[in-house]
Image (tube, rainbow, N blue to C red):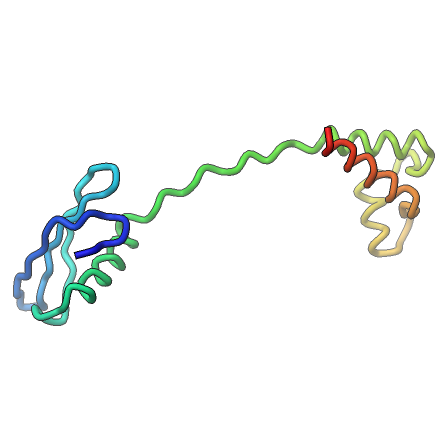
Length: 131
């Protein structure tokens, strides 16, 4: 019998008052065995249907590991370079943060960056990414 992601070892059926239990054993890729019990409709279940029920149960009791978080680089240095360059060129007024200026481009209120400032910021970011 094929159980996706596991090595099938054995199964057997036991009729109980509450239904037919199927006790099964599979081996994980790391060598650990999993012994568990599921309830099946009847003892004449075919291997394909049984393997699907076992796979569904394993998805609940043995979920795949949560991957490690992706390390996202800190873009603060790029932000500081863009901000300083825009201030030096006079395109970003003192006392106005880059976030506020960029936000104002989209809501058209208060101080907003000019097209030149946006183009310069893009050039700085592209040059920094190319290093």
